[in-house]
Length: 222
Length: 222
DNA sequence: GTCAATCATCTTGTATACAAAAACCCATTC
DNA sequence: GAATGGGTTTTTGTATACAAGATGATTGAC
Image 1 (cartoon, rainbow over the protein chains, first blue to last red):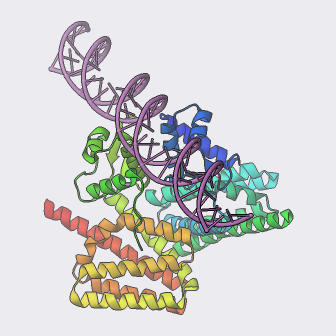
Image 2 (cartoon, protein in one colour):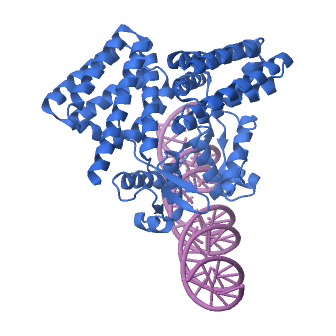
Image 3 (cartoon, rainbow over the protein chains, first blue to last red):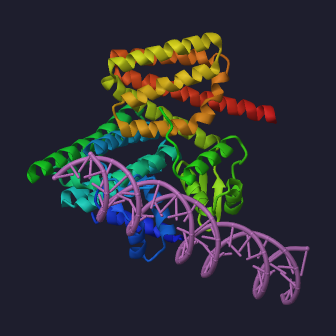
């Protein structure tokens, strides 16, 4: 997948701003001052406003009329809700994929799982993360529903920063791999209901793990 | 639900443009000339461009860099895909609602169905449509997942112009009502799986009916 | 001392002006 | 006759200028 060069200034700004929000430079509730940001990026307010709208579209920023743009990081509740929806979307992908998946895609999934296993043995969370990503995206695509695949991919991307952390929980990688194998099995058998359920659980567990992680972090902070 | 006054010019323009696209003034593939539209709405290009971005967000127009904005009506394939996703999202709402719905919401659903029955007997598709809308939105809300409810509502809205037509198909209203009652029954019994399945089928049927409608229209045109 | 109103300031929303890229047209060439 | 090249025109993208609403402070009244 080759990243195409961004043509518009507004696009690059949106990407950079997104990065600044993800890496914590701007926190939840912060107001994003148009003129200050414009100076920072050495552009005028026009493309910067476009960038803000772009971010509002993906939910990272809330645009309040005549008030300004505010960083809007999802709180614990909204995050859990998003994971719930993610689980349902992936389940839907699995349901369709179980009927429509190609043999070559099945082979790719197997290959991804082999790499995952290697990553587990090496305790390499980064490698596992990358292969896990591949695994899921293949299923999105094999749903045979481009609209579904796009929407699912978008939410997947939005949850990325939160999903990554919970892989480091003790034993989570191995457990995840076991779940992947159950999913693959269901796909190979073409069992739509089973595939949907295993995928739903697989993602729902991620949400729960994340929830636990949040709770422990909160306790540690007190 | 009181519609709040639109504060920004760009919002009203987006709404009006949306209307112009829905009512067929602009067709699929048409390029939306910024200056011409700006003149038409008596505004400058700045708010008009914002409006276009707003519409791009909801998928109605495609923004191609340095090329312009193009109307992007979903084709038959994409429409079927969207109905498939709609079915899955509603199924998810139903799954959660079956566990979380309140007694008062159940009463509201019963009331909506009573009104639906009256509409069927009066052969009043508009009334049926309105009550049907209420029925579904209650279930979205009762999913107890605001994120899911919002996303589902957004897609629901996007499919509105296409969903409406198929109600006029012979016997569809009565069939729809029967399905509503099965859904209500599943909700009352708290049967998550059954509720999800009945809702999924209910919406999937809408997609199929719409597909048939498209096919007959196409044949009639030839 | 607290509250309210008015005014100054700041910020967003919109209009206009300018730059650069794409589309178009026509002529020239093979 | 088709294709290519250059120059013109249109159109998008960006900068700046202006208008109008929101914020905040200062002053006055109670």
